[in-house]
Each structure stands twice: as structure tokens, then as C-alpha cells.
Image 1 (cartoon, rainbow, N blue to C red):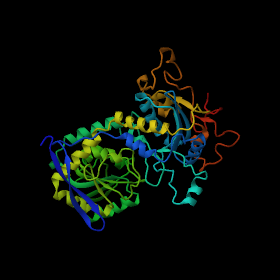
Image 2: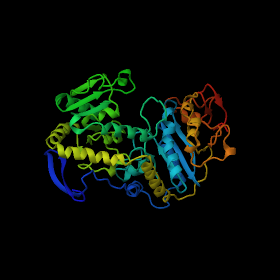
Image 3: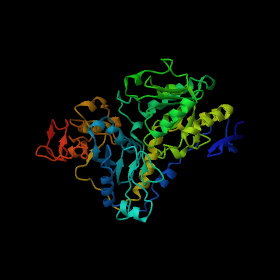
Image 4: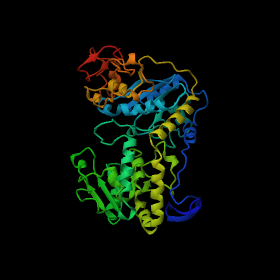
Length: 481
């Protein structure tokens, strides 16, 4: 009844007693209820470790040292709504997706006014700023007892990292190795696919597809082998030739159990299953956001996923998804959902309604909220750092991070991507309306110095040299200016 009260039967999993039931009355319309995003609260929680005016340049220097082992890391400054980047690491083999890790800052600044600030961004899979276990551990980790702030793709309860949207929201705008489109396009594609499949048409299995190397995923493989009537694990590396085959088209998607190196399942085809299992790999799985769009029940296995992305606390277990402690608990959850299909459909619809709201505009609202809150912690006024380069437009990123001309294939040639629109006289080589002035990644940032410590420290190369062709063509001077 419109404007009435819906009674949800919320199922929660407890060890060792199994599944228990409790009822919860929620004011609701007949359609799935949507809720406003509370990004201010998320930002407040993320920044709670630091007081007003407590962040110093020395803390950020320490943060920069901490992320040197990351594949991609950078130090960003926002000054008068202009963005400056200093590369800490931009390894050669990860360069295709390096622009994606900076692009979210550009998107935020295009849409929102952000106060001046300076911050370090880690793009590795794991949070890096550990919460100390005891006073001695605190001294060992942070000799001055001042843990520095770092933005990372995930956070957890044993780290100080601030969650920031990961690279998968804004991959390259054309064909690339991972194949997924940018979030707004992928989001609409999956929503459209989900709309075409009614609940009763969905395959009555819980599916997990992808790399299964992580220990919790290996445990799920063993569970699937024992529960072929309810679980289908499709083990595949998406980059392999067999990963390009489609399991649905090959007729290999309607049986349970474990299948290896046979075919892949695109996100749109995951919507053909009633239940979608999420198990972390490197502490989390960035496919979670896609699963929520399918109008299928997301079963979130907590073991193996200690880290969370910025949006996860805005989703409620029992309402938007089903949470279970371990892979071994998945069969009982499926049995419960099969016995209560009305509830299963409500959870599926509610999770999808929630994630459907999160377009790029909404994501940038989070970005603006957490950056604004962070700026209030600054204890100094940032000025452009030596060696930093300015980003104004998306194409500045492809030009700066270019590798043998490869990244230029994604140049959009459109100044609508700029933070500030260029004047006609500014549309000329080399920036063509952007802020690009010939910068490039330094030798020290482009190479893994822990693996090849001498490559940037001989008569021919130095850590500050700009490498265009991995040492084949070298421009003297830190940034080729």
C-alpha cells in the first residue's frame, strides 16, 4: 500500500547457530525505497583521526614515502580551483590505467568548488596506514606519533586510510585490456540488461566468476563442488583467450559446481542468475558495484573482504544485500532465500534501486564532501611544488602519461572535459586548450627501484629524467620543460 508500512523479515547469519530471523517494520511505498546519500557522514568518519589544522607538509612527506612501493601513487594540490600533480609512482606496465586514477579529481573539480588542499593518493589495492596495536607499535610505525593521511581505494578498521573512488569508475574511454566501459555507461548497460529478465526467468543458482586465486575464493570453489545444486563458480582470467568466450553463448552456465578456464560471464549476463556472490580477492572486489545493478540478490561473503569502498556503508545488510561470514555459509543463505522468494526479490530490487542512484554526479558529490572536510584539517597553505605539473583537461593526462604513443589513442580532443574552459588563444600545441606543457613521468617514478635499483642512477639516467620510451629516448630535466 502506497505510504504504508512494509514488514521486512531480515535474515542474519550467526556462528555457530546458523540463520536466525527477525522482523523489522520499515515505512515504505510499494516500490523499492530510495534513501539520500549521506556523504557528509562518510567524510566525517573518514577524517575523524585528525584534528583541525593538524596536517603538516612533513606528514605528507612521510605519506609520500609510505606509498613509494605502490604501482601508482601521486601527490595532488588544489590551489584556487587548479589541480597540480606530482608523480610518486607511475610504473611502466600500469600506465594504461594511470590517468584513470587521477581523472576523478578532474571530474570533481569540474563540478564542485573545492577549498585549497594538498594530499597523497595511493592507488594500490590495500590500505597502507595501519592503526597501531599498542604504544610500542605506534612508535615503530610513526616515530613522531602523527600518522599521515592517505587517500586509498579502500579503507578498513585497522588503517587510517581515507576511501577514494578507485580507477575502475573511469577507465580509458575506448578499447582497453580490461574491457569494462566507464561507470555511467556500464551502469546503464547492466540496468538495461536486468530490466529484460524477470525474476522467474533467472537461473536458480548463485554464481561467482573471475580469478579464484585468493584463499577465500578457493574455499568457495570447494563449497561449489559439494553444492552443485545451488552454487556455480566459474574460474577464469578475463585476459586469457578463453575469457573472451561467453559462457551463456557456449551453453556452459546452467549447471552448478566448479568450472575452470572455459569461458567468461560479462556483467550483463550475470543478471541472468538469481544470486550473485561477492568474495574479496586483494582485500576487496571492485566488481561489487556492478553486481548490485542486476536485480539479483547479492550475497556478500565477509571473509576475504575486510576492506570497504567509499559507498559500502550506505548499503544495509538484510535490506540491500545478504551478508554471510564465510564461503561455507553460502549454501544455507541460498536455501533460506529459496524458501522465502518474496523476501529475496525485495532484497534484489532494493539493492538495485540503491546502486542505480549512484551515477558519476553522485560520486563527485562524495569526492567534494570528503575533500572539503579534509581541507579543514590542513595546517598550512599549499603552493605549487617543484616538479608538479598542472592538469586542466582529460587529455593532459594521456599526454603526460603517454607511453610510446599508446595512450594518445584515448585523447578525447574535447575541451568540455576541462576544469576551466580555455580561451581561444590557449588552444594551441602542445596542450590544445589543456595545461600540458611537455611534462612526462620521471625515471624514478616510472621504474620499480626496488626491483632495478640502478636503472635510474648511472651516467645515462637519473631519477629526475623524463623517460618517453623507457630509456630509449630521454629528455634531460625533471619534467622535460
